[in-house]
Image (cartoon, rainbow, N blue to C red; front, side, top):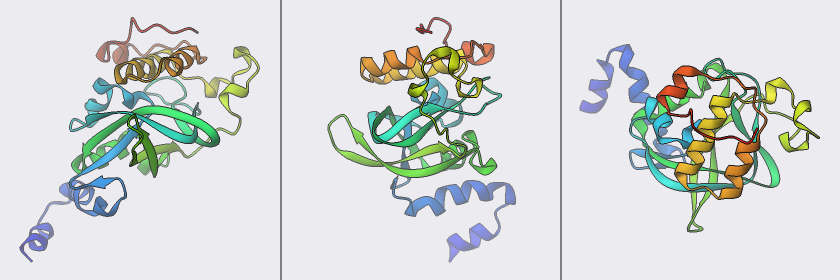
Length: 215
């Protein structure tokens, strides 16, 4: 009773923190007071995820089966198309598994624009390097691309709304290398068509200037 009495006198500004910490305990990806998260985009990089989710602790590389990595729409922050995962039989997405405090759940939802309908969360089975499977929280774009990126015949035919910015792609590459993701996947990331845009603030904060791309 004391616990619920304390909740009743909390200021409204703290309710989102309380709900993020208490309500999600039934989520499949929850382990105690933490949750497992699969980052396949910019959140593969430690410096990036710690900007808004300082409690994140890296578990290691994760592999999501029957999904593909793709890019679609536009984000002002990065100046290009953000990453998403799209259900695709036989495909694989490599990324980084993190253990994060439930107190940061609202923060990562905000980062992904969940409340704005930009991304939505899903609980997905992700395989670790030791072949065990963990249920992890991942985010998918609400506006999913129909045609796979690899199906475009040449770079010039990749629509602008399917091209990440140079800075964003560099962040993915650096995060993948930091996590120890298999070399062929890193090379594929380096070859993705980007729009050439550089976000100077993020480039400096995340130390991305010297990250090499193939495109």
